[in-house]
Image (cartoon, rainbow, N blue to C red):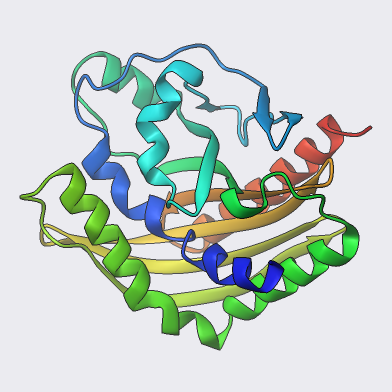
Length: 241
């Protein structure tokens, strides 16, 4: 099971970064208050926000963000900037440039994951963030375009290009963080996105954390690294048994 799941993991890494501008249309959402406890794999997981200015929409409206996660994963929580929530409420709309997602693999949501299984998955993800990652780019791009067409048949195709793997950003017991830069083009506009992916073992469950921000300079990568590491530390601390 674990070897097969490694292939699914890498299909999750860039889908969300490329769908946000299409999904978040003016007036689409009314947001609930923050929540900190989420249900996954028969467990109650406490997940604080990754940063003080990022908030969770609540269960009623989180479903609108579910297309940001690929079909292989289930979205557990999503965090977006408070300022963008206000823009959406005021009917002006907002294209998110920074946000975070918490996902679990559907095929292994209820599996008991021990230290050995976690290491196997984390090592496999680390390998995928090396030279072999580019081989999966075409499949990921096709999946994203299928989702875009399902949401809007007239949507222009999206292009992913020039992935730069940042390798392992940090490694601790029950947590491993990786990074990547990606060029994204849609409707003639291009931007670079910095993505941080963290593989986490919480209460013997496998959880994936993703943070995305528009790449501007080295500080964007530093934000990904620092935010993901601190977020993972706070989640592990909150779920100590």
